[in-house]
Image (cartoon, rainbow, N blue to C red; front, side, top):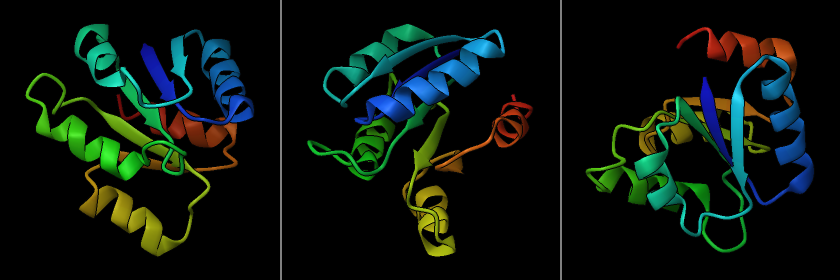
Length: 118
């Protein structure tokens, strides 16, 4: 499978990249949402792991943009965030439109459970 990680934290990008590559997947990453819509439109990603709290544009706003673009609207998006209360997770999936939600820090087992859905 092929994944894109969008997260401003180099540590979190590296951690998730290491887990995914260790499972044999292809991974690309970006430190901000700049240019990511075009990357997704042409990248053929299985899923995008999207952080919520980022300095230039938060994940909620970016996801609304992604869903409003006919070339990217159906992209599978997994919020990957330190926001982990039930209210925040519910909002991320039901109101913001994410397909799934992985709270940070995440374990390999939790990631494997999420990837089994594909």
